[in-house]
Every structure is written in C-alpha cells, then in structure tokens.
Image (tube, rainbow, N blue to C red; front, top):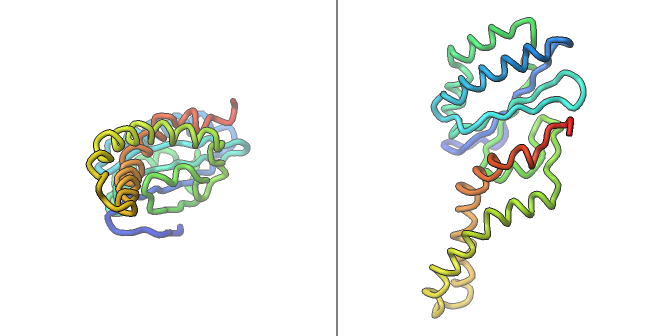
Length: 188
C-alpha cells in the first residue's frame, strides 16, 4: 500500500485491486453489490465505483471518502471485515493506493488501474456543462458590481469564485452523474 499526498481533513480516494479466481466472477460481482451498499452507509463515504477488467480477473474498487480518518474507520471496521470473510476463496485483495483528491482527479487515469481518462471531447463538454451556468451567474451578479475596480482585481474575481465552485461542488457531482458516459464499460 502506498500513500500519496494525503493531507488531514481533505477528501481521499482509495483504489483497491482484487484478484478473482477464474470462474468465480459472477459470485464476486454479487458480493460487490453488498459491500458497496454497506460502504455507502458508512459515515464519510462519498461514493463507490467498480471497474470491471478489460481482460483477466482483476477488479478495481474506487472508494471516495470525506477524509482520511473516516476512510481508516471503514478499512478497520467490523462490517468490512465481515464482508471480506464472505469472499474468502473467491477473491483476494492484492493492493491499494490512496490519493488525496479535490474532485478534479477524476479526469485523469486512476492510480493503480489500467482505466484510461475519458476522451478529451467528453472532458471539454462535461466541463462546459459545469462551468457555463456559473459563468453566466458570475457575469450577471458580480461583474456589474466590479466595473470600477482595477483590471487585475476584476480579473481575479472570476477564477476565485468559479474554480473552487467547480472543484468542490460541481465537477465531483457532474462526473458521478455522467460516470457511465465518461467511463463506459469495456464491453461497449
């Protein structure tokens, strides 16, 4: 297990890699539904995604948590241990990687996986869908009130308002909403 850039109190993403015994994939897939429901009910969980293998028998779980401490609580919980006991002999966890995230990392290849980033045209379209309404709102509400300010200060208002809004609120939700379109299953 490697820990990369994990800072206290920041959202974190963990990628868990599972090696599934040949012929036991269906049983493993059923198990993923149960442990996913369990993890989603756990305090601090912000989502679970399973990445199916393109070839072979390695599955990847991408878990997002509100902070390192809540992730650690899940990893050490009795509930998780019980779910792991159910899958003994079917699959084993072979690795994990953690990375502190702000929401924009979903545009890049996920650590420890072979999953490719979405095509750039999809990233551009998704970013436009997220940015346009807030750009319009900023132009309507903020720009008229800053007309007398010096140009460098006026120019700073837009990214100071838009970037945190996109990073922490809009893009994580939009990427979750459009996940199947951004990252279609390999059988498509």
